[in-house]
Length: 503
Image 1 (cartoon, one colour):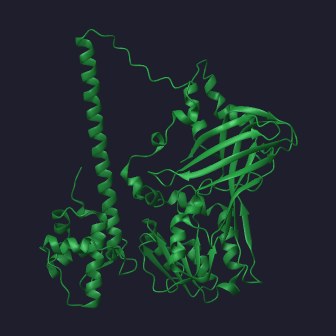
Image 2 (spheres, rainbow, N blue to C red; image 1 turned 180 degrees about the horizontal axis):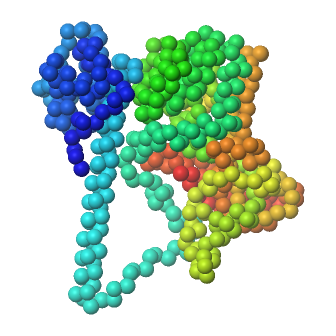
Image 3 (cartoon, rainbow, N blue to C red; image 1 turned 90 degrees about the vertical axis):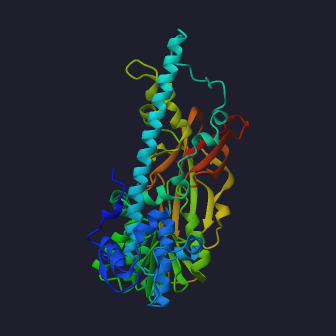
């Protein structure tokens, strides 16, 4: 595979030279800087083995200095000491030029380099595996041993929650630790069309803005994780004076085109980067974000929204959404269980019970029929997003279900509701939606925790329980959900601290 990425171009995007006003595609700009300004960025990057963030820092450093002093120059042969001071200063992560196409170019280069590196690792791992297999086979052949495969450890006698340690389910890839996987997953069109076509989601945000135009007139708005820019454009159309839109995915380039195509680029300013690193020219009146994931908290984006609130929201400002809750209910759905869980008991006459394990370990994301619900809906945790802290997002709650009919319990179904409200404005029109199985389906669906051992309940019976939700240490996108259930009348244990994962 070719290692020189200098031929990579994006013909649709014009970049501005670091030292003058010349505009051209990024590849030509880098060549221009070499010939006209005696600064070979590519040579410096390769020589010093600069990573993605170091490249971003250097570009922003040069732009900042040229802005202050148009005669500023940069020598390709800069000393390691001077370069180190630039690359260690996090202030240089903050963009100087909004919609800087050279920064987008760095991300494209990084993606190509990351892909090549992963392919190398896969090839190396496969070669090592072949060597191990070959050596093991030859050793056994030489010793005239039985060549049968070793048996795996039998854990059937262990409790489910003890046999699976947290580390067994954490991702090792370092890309996941720094959030690259999360942001990259939102760079593609498919996920955005799925979200936009979710009419419950998108129309709720639209109604929040359009039904309250008198409130938004003249306001400043920050859109965290703007994606295609749809929420920012809603805000602008609702009368916002200024909208700041932030995204750390390359979708920001398309969002910029969407904004310009709709004639809103005089109101909406787009920032490429993490919201924690962005510097806005002012505080804002409203922060809007569509941060919700499966089971509400999957993906961990709410952390960034809370940090943005604490840094950029004016005192008394509005968070949108403003309130949210996680809700649980008991479900009975024998057809679904037989199709996806018990199916493995008899696959064309063969037992494959080991395949059932993931349905016990992982919360199953699917749309359930309304008739599946066999209890009341119980809120186990609520947040006022104007006040909630990051620490509040991990919690333990006790709850009680009242069974609505005689039934067999196959699982615990989890979902959430969302509210947009502004109690300080008497004329403000609140907006609400729910991802309950009793409501119109959304792309979030529901998250069901399957019981390995189903049990019967009677109408009016009370089933009590405890839920604990925390993050995985290595990959904060994912959740650990510990659940317990018992009969209130007899304290019979039905589910004993079983650990599930949402990932």
